[in-house]
Length: 293
Image (cartoon, rainbow, N blue to C red; front, side, top):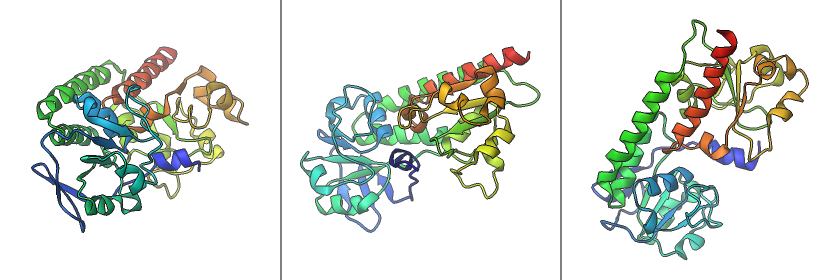
């Protein structure tokens, strides 16, 4: 598996609780965040997106190398995957946001008295709204959370209503990288496919994990109606590269051209831009319905 794919598959163990604006790291040091932090460092692409969505962008002094959105975010060589305490400390942060406790960074920052907010990958949309609320609250923008979440809810509901529901659900294959790693319905992205009424072929893979590595033979036999490529940036996959794979020309999605390339960051994060992912998939489903209707 590629490093970028590994980074996108990180799961997190619950390690932090919020009490008021005091962030408490389990086994570490409690640190009170200021009412409106002025030097925020984000080591999570989704947290970066959330920060700007709630109006805390001007308080952000550094974001990690994977934070591609918004473009004006102060992107650096900092890593959330292998965080370095010395590199982070140079920015003199008064709040650090992360999505995993890699390198025991929570404890290290706690020793410096720096509060840390850990926002793990959301399991569903309820988790998305909860994290937006927590980030808004921790940065002094509590009122903005309701506005941002309401807009996401409105757009998601409109997209879901627009998607046709055939008697036999369309099958989807979600590709994380060119080695055929996928995501089941037990993941956040898998939940998005369920919202749109799609059947995920990864769910029935033998010994299926949350992010199973499928075989080409399994995918071909699964004959998905829709293929979603979440490896266009990291791995250079396109409709053409998929069509050129041995045996894949017989797959329904390849025959009808329903191979949907989606920017990796949009397909792997759980912030407000999830609506862009849903829109892309919904358009493909509508086209599929046109083929079969």
